[in-house]
Length: 561
Ligand code: NOJ
Image (cartoon, rainbow, N blue to C red):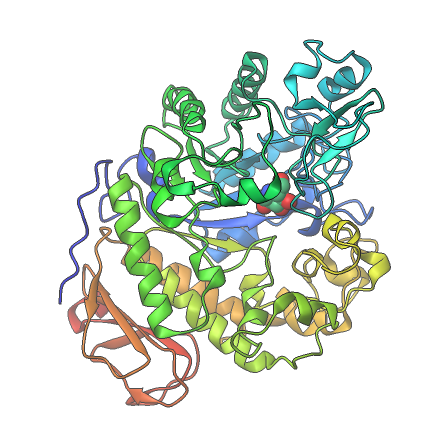
């Protein structure tokens, strides 16, 4: 059966991917760098821009099309840099604006685009405008840039509502004069008031600042939460939870007005040549995602459905079908994400028994239930090859090309994620996927830098180091290199045709030009589909596709190309 996708309303990249720079993002492989944990040049334990620049050859050899750089702005690190004190500068521990320019030049010189993270829902409590707001009186224009409300009780001693923050605890912080400010995340991350024109103007200046510096695109943090209905009386948390998302009635999230913001941003993006791209991190129901991805909005939106899907044929196929249709309807291309800085690495998720509670597993220090790491890596490589064969863009997270598992046994004293403290030690948080990368099997911090890393690295990191894997055809690093190189050669129009009648547990699809991808999600071997195998995520037999393995095949004519 041919699965015809609805026609896109936005331009589609030409088969050779050379449709001018305006559509480069539609089928790009984007590599996420979490800068503090990527490479440290000066030995202070924190990754930095010169460290990243020095590793551009690694990214070029890997074959990525773009880098998404997580926040590198001045920050007190209350939330891993997502608490931004100055949106138009570089944290001195990470580098300087000149070093940022050097990074852009090095990436562009290697043919790699750069996407930076924009954090528009909140600032840091160290942001000058928030300091001014604290120093100013209730009702002042300074306080109007954030979301201040009078507390309940005679003297405002109770929070304005019972809302809780994402990391735990109240979503309100008292400032001592009867007023409280809203923070959907940590108390050090006060929410902006997007009804305030100054806030809008300032963000446009920020976007212009980076676009003028040569940045190719933006990843928009918490894109669904900017505009809020804060009219009084405030609803209770229970009333909020009962708000009905599909008709846009929710007070805090996914409101109609947020799209006005993005339409204005789009006009700015399109004033550049090539237009700047953007991808929304919007935690909204799948059918609402396309609003963020539309060509007059941000243009693309993350689909996190595979992060929540078990390694299962039916689930994977259902996610792909739904998201290709949604992206096409939006005039966008889909995104595929298996790992990022907020979730347990996929090599580990797939090592746990299906349905295991990841939070509980992390709390046990990674012992309960026991993880089958061999299986996790086998499935992770199969899932990676599966998504890399799909139409749309794939977002890779640093270290997944090394097959890195989660570090689950970080001692409590080392944890940096606000989740740990704010949840009263009931949720360990996201540090386990943010442990600095092992570049070398020996030496201080495994080649991350000249000094110890800011999060402790386990001894077993040595076995995953890039220098150990380099040149070993069986390694995960070489597998990623082969996959990306082959994907670039096979680059084709954004069509997909499902192959029906495959054995139970096998999902296969064809792309234009005679490229077939088949994944055996089961554990028993199945017959290999016809064609010449040009990539496999693990060992395969002459005629059999082993369990938990993906192969790419080309028709004989294509393979000879
Ligand atoms: C989403 C980011 O990915 C996450 O790391 C951060 O904690 C929240 N947004 C708040 O900015």
